Amino acid sequence: MSSKKGISFLEILVVLTIVGILLAVILPNFTTYIEQTNAQTAQNNLMAIAAAQKKYFEDNGNYYASALPNKNDPNINANLSLSLMTNDAFSYNCSTAVLPYQCTAWDGTDTLTLNPNASPSITCADNGNNGKCPANLQ
Image 1 (cartoon, one colour):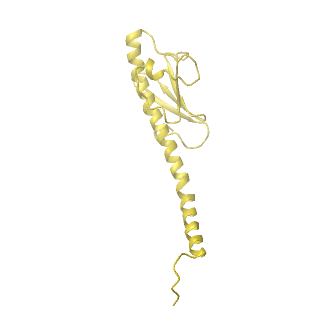
Image 2 (image 1 turned 90 degrees about the vertical axis):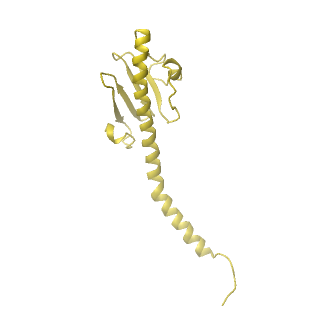
Image 3 (image 1 turned 60 degrees about the vertical axis):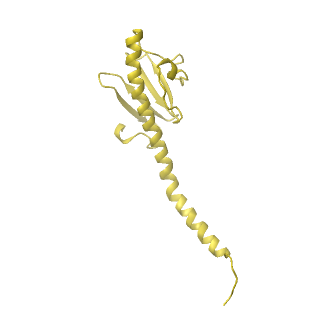
């Protein structure tokens, strides 16, 4: 019986192969999960914007509109007295070009749009066909 201790090259190769297979299976699912979580956060942020827009209208007589249409509004938290989580890969903007107002969140390919009415709703356009839109918005 040999008393050599250690790991053979073949054993290392088998372990690396197993780790590679596991990563190939898990990584796409994890990425999809993160993207859908970000979209869910954006949906929650848009609903918070809807409530803030209602209060803004009550205080000012008009709805808040971003200074730069169709661009990320870095002042949306301050102007609407919000504390949105903005680290979700989405950019936020509000416009009064569509009456009474329209707020969007987009990540470069997908757009979530707040539809203000008696009970605000959100739609999602999966422009990249990547499945990031939450199931309840498809």
